Image (cartoon, rainbow, N blue to C red; front, side, top):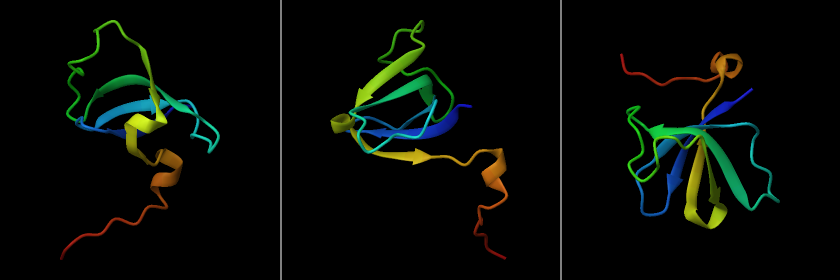
Length: 81
């Protein structure tokens, strides 16, 4: 099952995509599918027919792993009253 991530790339705006598995410490790249901007629009530097992009780790500042439906119940959201 694919997991949604927010990918922060050096010198670029964050993008959203899906990965097939969590990255391992030995991986030298991250393979991301269905890449789009955070607002859902197409990424301007990619051809519209691109399905998957491979980013080397040295280009990635950090990676946010979003919770899936099963984990969502365990996430504590903070709010003001």
